[in-house]
Image (cartoon, rainbow, N blue to C red; front, side, top):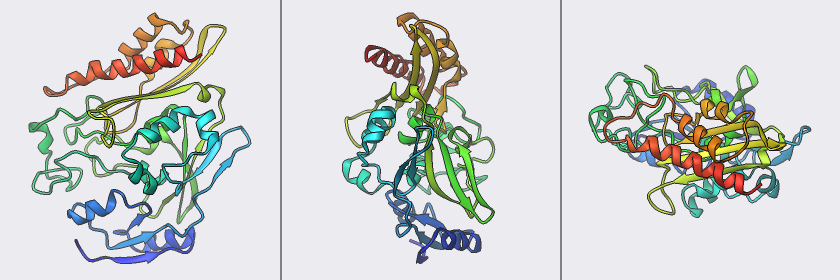
Length: 326
């Protein structure tokens, strides 16, 4: 592991100032992923700026009925406002990693997870995301777990978070602060597609930290659900997942938000599937049309064609189980 300096920030302003002065620094909170990457030589920060002393671990109500969740809230939070009013988020949190890891993991860190691509995590392989311009070993390697949507010739890795997929379905906003002040980033814009610069994974500037995630108070958010398909029941990342939130009035779908995990380099908003539901009865036929539309534009590789039908299946299951719960 490369030597680094450790600093425990005493305020948000101090953390931002340290980041501005040390562009090679990284922040640390739960450290469930970063320390492994540092140990393996994947990340080499000059400084570690510890945020754990900051008061960013509260959950508070918003005037519109939504919630503001502090960036340092642990992923084992059992806040009943989340359970009752945003069930898709509670289900996604419970499906992630193991209980022990969730005890340490934070909301902010969850959004900043690095990809689980084996070519990224083993320095002997070329990886544009780890070493820009070096190439992508995954393009000629095993692509069975890689993306089918939103890929580029530079990267085909998938984003690993469950939480971020649920936040997509809830239209969350990420509140950040840097040297130029505070700003809000819609969750759909927070994670970047790889394009030609896969090393730039999120819209955070070098001097910015995440303060909180805000969930708008929409009635449809209480009618939401998360389904994750993985190779074993615990401590496995999604091969495909779906987060859905649907508002039905008078038997007709009035609004729908559908997001996919495990199939793209970012949590993937399936807008074609949402459009397929709007204005229709929330029945089996509409669900089937939406499920098939969820993978519009998919470009699977030879080893992961199964993900097209798998993604459609998890969307179909999530919507069907949600409909049955009405």
